[in-house]
Structures are given as C-alpha cells and as structure tokens.
Image 1 (cartoon, rainbow, N blue to C red):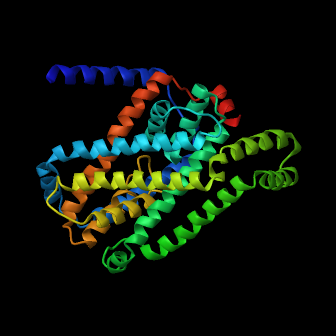
Image 2 (cartoon, rainbow, N blue to C red):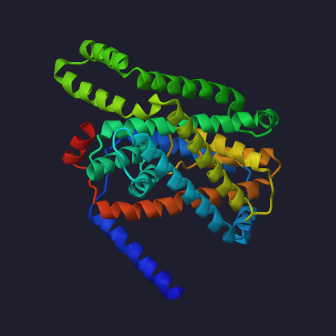
Image 3 (cartoon, helix red, strand yellow):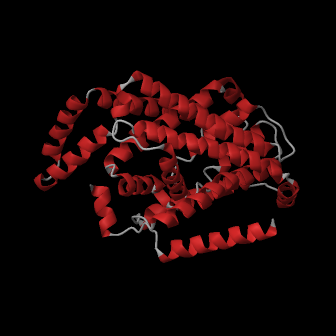
Length: 362
C-alpha cells in the first residue's frame, strides 16, 4: 500500500541518517589502490559497452517485466540464509552461534563488500561478531577465507561443467584473454589454497611450529607475541576442517548457495526477451564471479558486467538485451542486500576508530 511504502521510506531515511551520524567507516586504503580499481572498472565498462546502441538498450530496460525480480530476490535471500548457516557451521568448534544471529552479521559483511573497496566487509563482519559474541577476529577471518576458497572451487566447477560449451564461446565472446586458460590457472590457485588450509587444520601443532619458526626469524622480537597469538587464533578458526564430513558439508552448502544464485539469474532472465539454458547461466555465474576477484571500484562495477555481457553475446543474445539484463541483474544483486545490511549496521553503531583497530589486531 501507499501508506506502507511511505513508512518504509521514512524508516530507511532514518536508518541512513543514523548511519551518517554514527560515521561508519573502514580502514583507509591507499589512494593509488582506489584509483587503480576505478580505472580498471572504467576499462571494463568501456570494453563491454563499445558499439552499444543506447536507444535499443534503454528500450530493453524500459520494457522488462520487473515482477520476475521478486522471486529472484527471494531465492537470493534463501541463499544468504544458507551462507549464514555455513558460517555458523564453520564457527561451531569455536562457539555455537545460532544462524538467526549470524544472518544480520553476514548481511552486513556483504553490504560492506558492495560499498567499500578491497572487500572490507569481511573485516567488518568479523569485528561485529567479536563485539556480539566474543569470537576472536583472526579466528573469524580464518573461516571467512575458507568460505571464499570453497566459493572459488564451486565457481570453477561451474565453469568446468560447461567446458565443452566454453570451448565454443571463447573465440567469439570478445572477452579479454583465454577464459579456459584462466580457469585452469584459477583451479590450481584455489585447489592449492584448499589443500594448504586442510593440512593446516589437520596438523595444527606442526603448522604452529612452522609458523613460530618463521615468526622468530623474520619478524622483530617486539611483534613475536602478538603475531603468534593471532596465528594460534587463526588456526582455531580452521578446526571445522578437521572432519571429512564437515568439509563435505561446507562444499555441499557452497554448491547449494551458488545454485540458488544462478536461480536468481534464471528468474531475472524471464524479465527479458531471450532464453538460454540454466547451464549457460551457471557458466555466466562462474565467470563473472571469478572476474570480480580483479581489483575494481566498489560494487564490482565493470568486472561483473563485462564478462556477463560477453558470455550472453557469445550465446547469440543481442548486445543491447545482454547489457540491459546484466545491468538489471547487477542492481538486483547489489541493492537489496546493501539496503538490508545498512539497516542492520545502523543497529550496531559501528565506527572505525582506534579502539576498533585494536579489536582487529586482537
């Protein structure tokens, strides 16, 4: 209803004023890093939109059936709840925290990734969890890194499931580089990182001794105790990986999360006048999310859009339609979780200050 919409808008306005008053900030990154990300985003935007007929693009956007975004956003939030459950599961050996408590913190983290550079949302959610539940930041960050490794493995699996299709597309997609070669390199990186983390989890005492050896020989003596403490808390965060069953559960939930996100791609596709298979959207999902690991402006501007448009045009979708769909999909992925995360953040009153930096260091 109109009155309900007005109340919702007023509530959001108050939330944003609260967000401003509390000056929620993050640790500053170097200016050159920020501007490098901006330049990379500009390049990707230029690359993906060159030759685009803007009148056709706007016609596509205006004529889309936006009702299809509702079920798409719904399945995305189901996936977000499963992300919170997965994080609850990874943190289980350290502290049992209900998923309903983890969900707002997870949402804040994804909001932070969307609006701050350098994925600072990961640090933000680790700090908030420490404030709420007393979990050491270094232990939380260990579980978050594990999440990202499993996500990367699943994204690469999505690409390799469609490897025969990819072989047909790389030549005509116009996307920079050889996607197959990037996928092979990425597989080595993510699987290598996964093996290292699994070994560290299974042999924590050996890992700690190796870590202490490097700490005592490479760092100033005044840092030994602090760094050693962080290392041991970090290893505590890997405890869930000591069980093969736990590893399988984390992998299973990661697959489910990304299938649900592909489901959002599928629902949003129905708002536009084209059809590709669910497997094609899995391939698109895998490629665009791997591309977002490239430094860019906040919100993955350009690095999300360019590969998405490239994959769809390689499948024969008109460029204007592919660009309209990818833009709307990007906004639909970015906006709802950012609004909800900002709402939860205002309730926490987080401010990046000297005391907050101390929390990270501890």
